[in-house]
Length: 277
Image 1: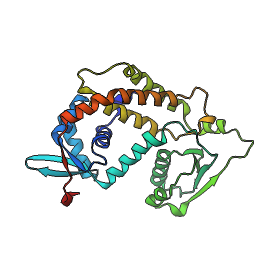
Image 2: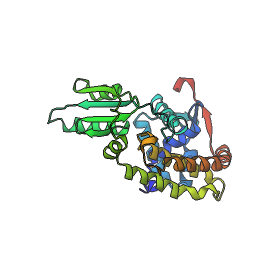
Image 3: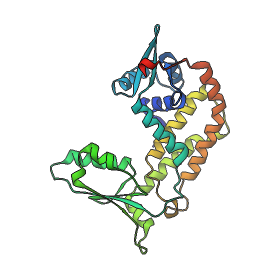
Image 4: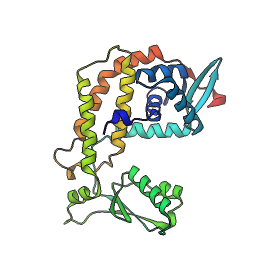
């Protein structure tokens, strides 16, 4: 997987706003966003289109100041960004604290409900579940999927349990049969290949550090979002998540001083007006 090519402008935009706006009660000038995204290789038209689409989807709000338009977060986008922040900085990529608990979700849907079945499977995969059997999905730890099931209107067709495996079961083999470990390994290894050189390099010009750190964070979140945080003690000995996380943190720390300097120079920020918050 080439993460650089698969990053969508909206993913970069959310990362940018989480980095510069989240928790600060400010809005950012559209021209500042265009300048930063140009450094990241995204043209002005694509950036403007992304801003408009995100406003229409309730992910951004506009605030006019004179002749300039500024953009800020909505409650929905702030919640999405706080979740991503937790995933990167608190939860992490390596699950060393698993207590042996699994969440099991069984479902039985009418044969004609193909769309509902597809939507449920997609959301379960996003939430870290894998298919133990066709109608029985499993995730490590205690995963609250009640809101997910309610949102899809499938509460009457779903049963949720917490369970522990029998002492004689080969959990490592079960994990290998349920999740695509080879594919997940490839994502982590590709991330390391792309970013490890930056552990000893700095961008030229220095202002490019802001765009580079933006891509770093967006790509890292994209990788770990695919990872259900399987218990590391049941994964292969050479599981690459730990090395990839070390690379992410090392490059992030190296870029941050230059990125902060660039943001102070480039970004036009204004406080959120109470009447528009």
